[in-house]
Structures are given as structure tokens and as C-alpha cells.
Length: 407
Image (spheres, rainbow, N blue to C red):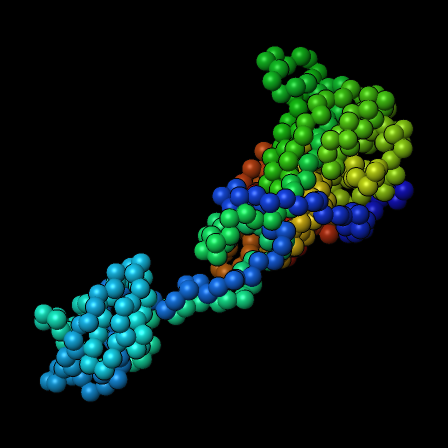
């Protein structure tokens, strides 16, 4: 088992054990935020025919070549084409067709003139200016041509993609299964969140709920295992239960070096293969990764703030990858620190903050209270700024790398 790894080394180890979950088919209306499991190509043009963008007249540009206010072109209207109908006639020289928004362009016509740009007299329309061929015609395939890539495997399905798939007549969508992730809280001091009265020396279980929300944000389905007291055998049994029902187990607490930190021993007792223990970041250094039956056990700090940072940096990309995301890595951005950071950083320090744009520059404003146990500083935060290992106090205006967390 490797110890005191860099964040990059830990990320590389975890990426090497990723395997995508299985697939299923869901109804189109249920596909929002799911991950597409197959490429989809357009089987037809969208739209499938040339059409008019507004109410007007479809006609031949050649008939208007010499039209002017002094010598307007007079054309005979041969039919009216409401939306949803198909043309019954070809537009021949000297003719026009009255057309409504979205209606197909009739054969022979090569431009459309708006109602307000012409004069109508009985069965004739008078045009006082030339119009070029192709004016005001939405071509077939404007949105997407037949055979084009409509949606790529590994893409998260958003509302626009649902509409596009619907326009192609697709009713059932192949998607990756949502990974099931079991959450186990450990610690003699932890009590259920619903406890009306908090006993002396106890704290409510906040990490499990924060992690469940983070799991859902990253496309996973959380499964609560409850709270285990600080006994290796009890923790090990709970982890085993999680491995039976889920694709991955996340624990919080008991992963450091104290007398009551029993998670490492529990993982050893159940015969899991430990991958690494502790990484050179702050907060979140206390972390253990292990593997059993091909499933990851990721043991995070009992401090809620530290656990959330470790989750964002290591668990979130892992989950997105096994969920089938094509873009699973944490997105990075170079930012300028607005307030600076006063503490020295013996190892890589992750600070919570939010992105602002000032004078065209990406600026990170650090949120208040960066303590290991603090969750409030994550509210509204969408960045984790990475202050390099070995840095002293960092002044305002310093450029650093930041990981985008999405809030």
C-alpha cells in the first residue's frame, strides 16, 4: 500500500480501476441528466423539407429580376399552403403560392416574400422589388443533416438533446446505469440527523447528507448504510453489506491515526486490497482507498469539510467515469486570488471560493471559514483553488490553478 501520495498519484491509481456500469433503455421523457450509452446519428434531415420562416408568398426570383416601384411584378396566386399541408402545384413563371410559417416550399419556388412587403389584389400579388434566390427559405437539414452525429456516447442528456432526439422520432434512449454508492458514517460521537435533542458530546450526521447530494449531482444513486460505532468488526460488516448492494462504498471518519480510528483495520479484516493511505493535501489528507471484488472502498475524513474536498477531487471524477461520462475529469481553470491566503502551505492546500469575472479576468473570491469541519463555506462555492505545496502566505493577485466543482 502506498502512503502520502500526491493528489495526481492518487487520481492515477483510481482511474486505473474504473469500469463503466451496465446500460439500460429509458423512455425519452425520463432521460434527462442520464448519460447516453450509444452514438446517435440522424436518420433523416431536420427539418425534413425546405420551409418558410414566416407568412408570405413563395415565388420565383427570376420573375422579380426587373421589379421596381415604377414597374412592379404581378404574379397570379395559384394556391394557399397552410402549415401541415403539402403543396399541390408547382410554381411556374408568373405564379406565386400563398404560404404560412413552417409550410413546405412548393416546387419551382426559390424565395419567399413577407406579406407586409407586397400588395395583394384579388388572386394576384404585386411585388415592387427584386429578391434573390434562396431568400427567406429554411433549407432541409438546417438543424441537422441526415447521417450527421446527433448525440455522442458519454454525453449527459440535457433538454435540447431530448428535443433533438424527439425530432428524430426516438422514443427509447440507451443510457448507462446510475452507479449505486453506499455511504457509511463511523464514529461513537455521531447520531442520526433526526435526533431532536443532541446529547452531550455528540454531533449530528451531516457528512452523509452532504455526500448524498454530491453523489446525485454527479449522476450516482446514494444508499445509506447508517452509522457504525468505532469497532473494526462492526465497520467491516457494514462495508461488506455495502459491497453486496452497491458499486462503491464511501465511509467517513476513523481513517486517521488515533486510538479510535478503526476503518483501516476494518478494511484489512475484510480482506480488501489497500491501494493507498493519506495524500499530500490539506484539508483531506486522511483518506484510504481499497478494492474488493473489483469495487472501490473510499474512506474519507470525519471532518465534513475535508470529506467534501476529497470527494470533489477523487470520488467525483471516479463516479463520473464509471457512470459513462466522456468528460469525467475535474475541469481546471487559472484564476487570480482576490483576497490572497495568509497561512503557509506545507502541502497542496485547497481553498473554497467562487468565480467572478473582473475586467475580463477570472478571479477567485475565497469564502470565509476554511476549517476542516466547516460545510458553510461550500455554499455558493464553485471552485477549489489549489495553492502549491511549499508556498508561504499568498498575497492578493497571485495566479493559481483551481478545480471547478459546479457549486
